[in-house]
Structure formats: C-alpha cells, structure tokens
Image (tube, rainbow, N blue to C red):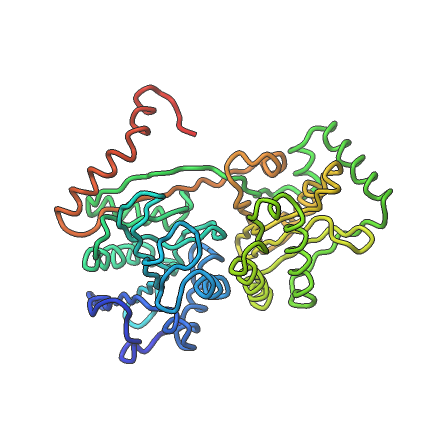
Length: 409
C-alpha cells in the first residue's frame, strides 16, 4: 500500500486539531490545493485498488472536477446544489501508521435540506449518487473509529454527521453498524430507498426474456424495425479516449435539445455542470473507467449512455435520447443493448443510480440496491442530547408507520 510521508504533511485548512493522531493513526482534512499533490494522489490511487467497496464518485477524476466547478478556492460552494456559500469542503484522509486506509470528501454545512441545522456530511452534489467512503479492505471498522473520533474532537458548530446514500448491504455500512454497537453511539436512518440494479449469472438474452413479456419484447423488436426504416441504425460501444470530445459534445447537445433544456436543467444549461461533465468523462476515459454507448441513425446519435466501470461493480451515470424519436423508445432500446454488461467478466453488478420507481429502468432491471442515508451523533454530552432531540423529530413519521404496520415509501 502506498504511503504518505506525514512528517511533511500539508498545512491544514481548519484548525490544528485537524491532524489527529492516536494509536498510530492520523486523520487529515485537506483542501483542494493539498489533495492534488502528486504524493497524495498516488496514495489515493493505491487506496482505490485496495478498497472493499468501489465508488467512482470519490475517485480523483470525479472529485477534482467537482471541487473545481462547485467550490471556490477557499473551499466555498458556488453552485446551487443544496449547500450555502459559506460551507467548507475538504477531503478527509484516514491513516493507519503511514498508510492511507480511507478517504471521504467532507463538508461542514449550515443547510440541512433547506433547514438551518449545522452539520458535517460526506459531500455529494446533484450529479454524484453514492456516498460510500473509499476504505481499504480489512480496515473498515478502524476507519470509522478514527473518523468518528476526529468528528468528536472537531465538531465546530455541527450537531451531527450526515452520511448520504450509503449502500445498505455494503461492507462500509456493516462496519459502521459494528462500531456503533461497540460504542453505544446513537444514529438514525433518515432516508431509505431501493434503486434498480443489474446483477445476474444469466446471459443478456436470458435476462431480457425473464424481465419482459413476450408481447413487450415483440413490441420492442417492432419499434426497432421502424427505426431502421428511417435510416441505417448502428450501436456503438467505446471505452477509451478516442473521439471522447465529440462524444461529450453530442451528448450535451442531445440532452439540451429535450425537455431538460427547456426546463433549464440540462447539463449544458449552466457552465459549471457543462464543464464538470466534460472534465469528468474525459478523466474517466483516461482512467479506464468509462463505458459509453450510442445508438446512431445515419451517423447521428439518437440515444446515448455513459457508465462508470469500477470492478467488481459499475454505475450508470447519464443517459439521454432524441425526443423526436420518442415513439420508437430509443432510450429503452439502448438499455437493452446495455444488458451486455452482464457478459463482462470484470463486472458483477451495475447500479442504475436511478430514483426508486424509475418507470423505464425498472421495466428491465429486476435487482435492487438498498441505499440508506444516516445521521450519527458526534461531540460531547450536550451535543448528543441535541442530536437525540433532532432525530426524534425527524424520524417521527417512521415510528408512526412502524406502530401502524405501514411501510414508508
């Protein structure tokens, strides 16, 4: 495992106690200028190869454009993604001795989903869909012990630690549960969901046959044939950097031409999201993480899809289609082509990153990936007492549903 020379650790952006050392371990909160140093990036890349749970949204090629576009040089958030301009952002790195065993981007925020509640949180923005920290396999419990101890010593104004979009059945959440049980630290699950996942030993054709009725598969074949009546229909799949820039431009233009463009929510509608998308996809391609799929009609894209491949898993990132051809279901037809992910030897599962109940993807993908957002008590007795009161209020609906036997959506 690559190590960092902690004798020459960077100066830290908050207070002296941001470097916390106990039992041979250290926790460092690093600003963008500090975590982009070559020695740190090398340790980060090594950690990725050791991680027990892959998360592309916390890899350098994703985090660097995110910080570049969505935070200022002083660590302040500059886009409208739920944070206030005064929020502070860092990358938190956890060490055992000199070896990096875990990493998570963190923010100190005064805005809790529109409510003025100061808190720490694992930092995700609107285009990041998994909050599992990168943790070296075998160090999961040690990571949480050290991170939570650091939060206790450095709470600032924060009343709790917020961990959004953790895979509920993953090793990070299992280790967190173990640490919470061992210490008696209070926690609350504030949101749960189950989003579509692709995972099966079946072949792509076998999976499709089991997922869709004969009638629906026949209808999709008819729609594809009608598309072919309009020109030469070609499916292209690529993974490298070759022609990545025109592919990005085509995707942005195709998305902006539809309802998202009309609503002002397309990636190209704002320079920050446009530049973030371009830099992220280029970085993913250079890192060997990008799988891109296109449906071309007479050489013009009418449906496009980007996956992040992080063995043993993969994550669907963005998809779009030409709404002029909506009656032929090009987006759904492209997702059927995407079932070829099942044939990859290095991919065991693919996370759709779609909202629960997504009308299109759940027609095909039959698996579910359970996600949970959690709040964790930090600090001293008074702060934990405040936390208990806040969580009792926030989860009151959950207790009511449990008492009546109803299951919240």
